[in-house]
Image (cartoon, rainbow, N blue to C red; front, side):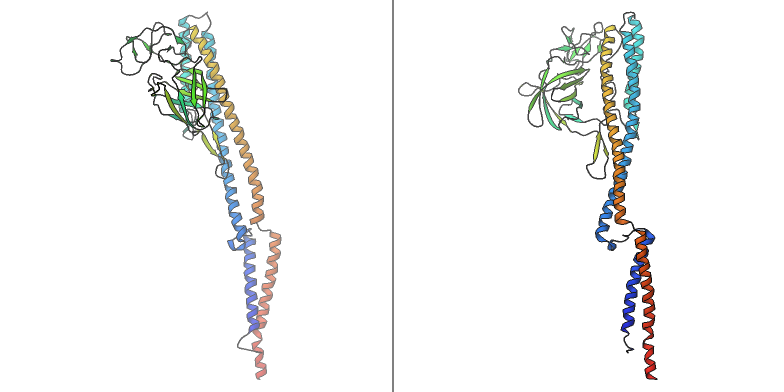
Length: 428
């Protein structure tokens, strides 16, 4: 028996410390509900749980983003529904104006409502917004740029490859004259005076509005402005694509200053040539009129629909003003104008229907994303729970074990501390 070093007591103390430490860890797991409270509890499990938690929170935010996108598209569709109703009303008025029972004076009265409806369509496009962002003015349509200030990209198909294109526009003959509807004019009354009229102007005879003059022509006072546009029939425009290949396109539509070039292979682009084109385009050394166009693929509203980088959905919302719907030149002042209006409004209704259909498809996709994110969140939460949550019944069993061991260690330590005092009995 020894009194200087009580090894038995030291062993009891060590075991008591270990049991107390294990009891403390078990108590923390029971009180917090987590079996990993610190990285040292399970280093690999801790790292995995942090990553999964970021994923879980990202999924919920992505779900909220998608839900907001659905609300935006619902609001847009509501506004487009009103535009649709206004187009239907213009169509009714155009049909009314095309009947022979009305005089031109009656048609003027009908046209007043037509013009007011056009103004309201334009106002809706320019002012409709959601959370401070304008949605129908073309802010979220595909963007493209040209190297000529007189030619602008007014839109293109989403299937078009991004990159640089070169258009050879020499097929347009500057000597040909066209009215506002894109029809070739055989004769025009002109009085050239470029010295007094340095700016490009296109004007029409106020008596016969089907007659127009080429850019740079000056008329006596009282003549009204119109727009010179190319005739769309049989005009082929060669286009060099980003891959280096050259394809032929045709002018499939003319609306005011906007021409549509497309082909059967899916090529489609709208060019706005309102600024005096083609007379103002500088000819190349070979006499051709070439412009370069960059299609960026950017512009649509990008919605983050997933928890990881690149999980996005681009929502394109085209312009739906009078120019976007190609109805800027419609009126019902004459029977011929009314018939032209019927044709253009019918095309505008078809275009708007296509836009709404496409936005409806976006909405369905976003609603599917919301549901998918919720299911993924549910499944990942179950997996996360298996890593991080405490099994209370199992942990309480462990807790009870360490509690008993701690009490036993305390009792043994008390007995070990009594042993040195027993030496005194030998010394008596």
